[in-house]
Image 1 (cartoon, rainbow, N blue to C red):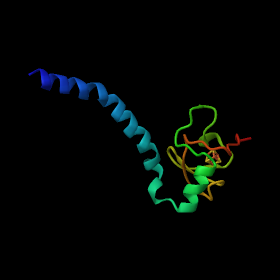
Image 2: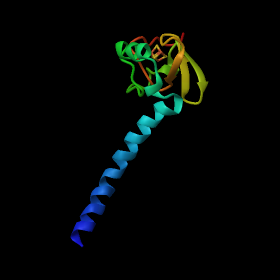
Image 3: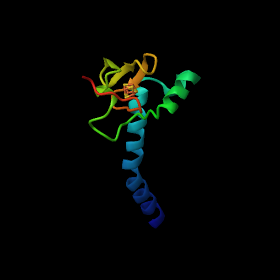
Image 4: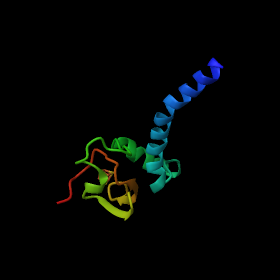
Length: 98
Ligand code: SF4
């Protein structure tokens, strides 16, 4: 059964990547449904280059002056018209809390 073994190995090798991608998508969905945002909100996020996961641990929504925590890992943002954001997110308007 070389084909079955090969298939098993291929699935086993890809599983961590698939789980990682699902985890990143889940971070946003735990706070809000990105698909349910209004068109203007989607455009605002795009214009401010908002991302769900900042690559810089010193620059993310949870450390931003415009952020108000609402639940674990989630909050609202003044720059986003008080709409929900991920505490690990980031946009071009980041301003560190004073
Ligand atoms: S201004 Fe940007 S970085 Fe700051 S909380 Fe809002 S979305 Fe996050």
